[in-house]
Length: 484
Ligand code: GAP
Image (cartoon, rainbow, N blue to C red):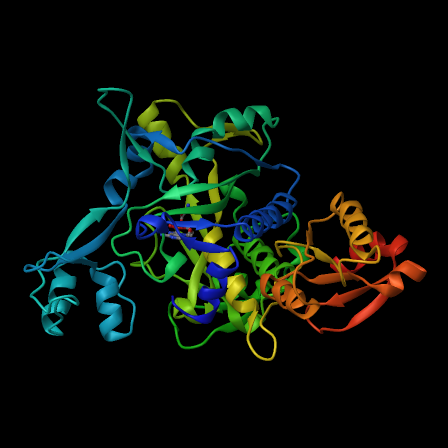
């Protein structure tokens, strides 16, 4: 990903290959002094939005290392694999479906090993590195195994998704939250996958962050939602599996009646789309839901639509999240392996709750928003949404004399109690503006000669470059208004 944006991200302290000092390790990245607050602000925006969807949605946290039995129960031990082909000569390995996609420009997920072999032979595909012959396709499990304890034989894994933590905590959480459904358990945290060929920068990482919300609900209420009326005429942007040529816009009501997508599922699709369009400011034409076919669906899903954003360096529309109807797959799996029932008694019935999962990759989303915000031209600007920009505003003295520096520091210190404020007194004012434009700071406040006469400062708008004068005493209210 050696484009202008990537160079800016490295130069300005957003993202860098992890352990770059030692040549790095493919699939691992670090967030720097601008990247870390940006990522945290995305996560906080996600939390604020999704946890407020229902009074019974809560956040939990949990261990990254989980015992083998968790993944026996979830099916990851048996099914969480990707097809791999290795060169007979140089042993270079690739994902079979990605190799075919690169050559034939269509998706090939979910085939069996024989089908991959047949296609590779038919299209005479060779090793990308040495042009050698490729061996037979096989499967590789993507989890990172670990052993726990000294000389211990206790097998465990780094979690490949955050989701299993809420599942193994479901029964206790249901008790604690006064036995109500739906119950939402959100977790923002690291996940690990030993991806076969991590490419496209942060698109395919080996250690990454997920923000996932597991919604446990009564399956007899799948085709209902108490707030359905608020979304039924809302238009979703959908790319159906049976017609991959065109994204269509359909009301939730039509998607329910004409295509049989259940109301509980559609309600959450609408809220997810609104998160992207209304909260993050993604242009509608760059957003769509992509329905996965039976072959493409994750092994645990009954309904599966990906959330896709059109990002050039991801190769066009690409997955940044997913809405997964996991049924009782996980809770029943845990009941079977742990021998501890996961049923609830609710509304006079005993049953195992079903799960609707709203799953997002934080790194992919953050990168997508960076790319959509990046504008090159007379000025280079990261026009990030205000909610996620690393800083709310910057404060500068025009020059470091005549009391302007002291006053600017005073303004900075006062505002820092309420906002994230950058202070810069080095170099020309033009260069300082340009630096803030590049890190996406929405407003720059300058203390100048006039400030010393009438206690007013200029506020410059990142997107328009325009300035206005505001009294120092009114600054806090003004910034709050501008950020809103
Ligand atoms: N709990 C469900 C689950 O993990 P997934 O589709 O495998 O579903 C969810 O992953 C999201 O996590 C994806 O939509 C993507 O945004 C992100 N993700 C998955 N693998 C990733 C990787 N190797 N690197 C970066 N993000 C990844």
